[in-house]
Length: 498
Image (cartoon, rainbow, N blue to C red; front, side, top):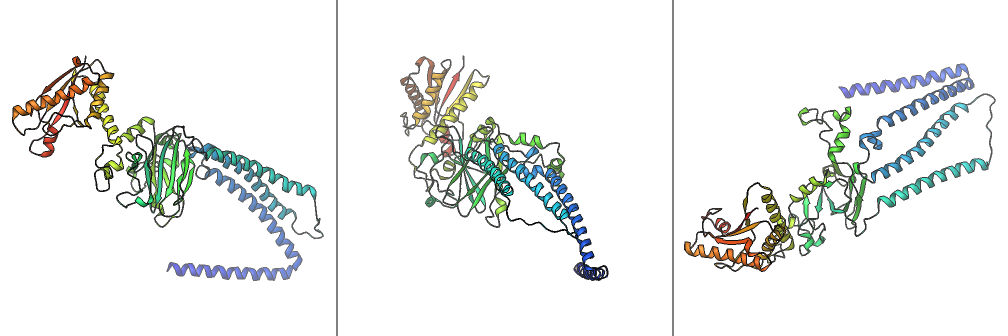
């Protein structure tokens, strides 16, 4: 029924238009062709002037109204160091083109009015005018020179790579249909090597080369988290088709091309929370994020920076949105400490691990960080003495001989006692409940003495140390399982504070 009504309305409009044209034709014949044409020209000229006024007013008014969204003014000004330079180029271009636009529109419609047809008026034709040529050639050339030079200066500043010795956080963004893999370096701050031939879906999505030790602490994050006021270098590439790495709030935009890695360097200057503060109190941002569910909060409260793909890379293109968080350096370090290496979490000691029999640097460093973190937390407590487990000390089966890899944990203990001469340490040995209790007691005591001997041989004063064995006493896990027994076979050190 609705379709029929619309069709009838359109049909009536066509009939009315035809009838108006017939009436106009008849009135022209009655008044005379020339007089009718002059009146039509006058009306058209007046309407063109009125249209010009309305058009320019609406153009300027709409630009002012939408300036935040269209031009990045107000709360949406750039949140990066280089963003102000890019916005400056756009603003300078807008000034010149805006002036030209307004002048040309005024002249266009004013000339249509001023030079409308009049009886007795004749057009003046001239073939050449040097002054006009100079104006039409010189002024645009000067403006273009200013814009090009300014643009080149900004381009060289924005697109410059970082010097080799400059401190920078480097991450990698790999686009695919339809998502992003964001790879971070670990504590070594170095991204490992990749080889597309090593890509295995679900196992090695980026083709990381596991024999490259720089890969061992790299991790793949679900979101982009970066510290404020720290320079960031993003490696940008793609697996399948052309994508685009686009961070609109930071004025970052770079194609992700398969087989042709590119990069972008930027420094975020406004944290996510600080950007939210810009939005509070503005009606358009205080509106509900989801009108159907006001409990979610306002648009400002739910604001997040985002990564988008700015290429039409397929029907799932919209799903490539990823959250970007800019935080303080302390928050970033805390987030970083909670991330897990992809290699250690998914590849280590599996069929795909080429390093099964080796203790890797990344594991040694991880153990060291965990050891010192636990020690510092213990020293911050108010207790006069605290016990900590040496988790990475092992002995040959049924023996007090330390394994070669135990030295890394023992070296950590040497470092702690060297740096903290005010503490005394009691080394305590424990076993599981297998075998004769007296034999277990003797073995635990011998193992504690082996640890003490290692420490004294590395410069620790024997007066600061005591060694004692407790056999199967004080188990920390059930002896009914192999895992529990392994936990009970341990070395602990009790720190006495002075």
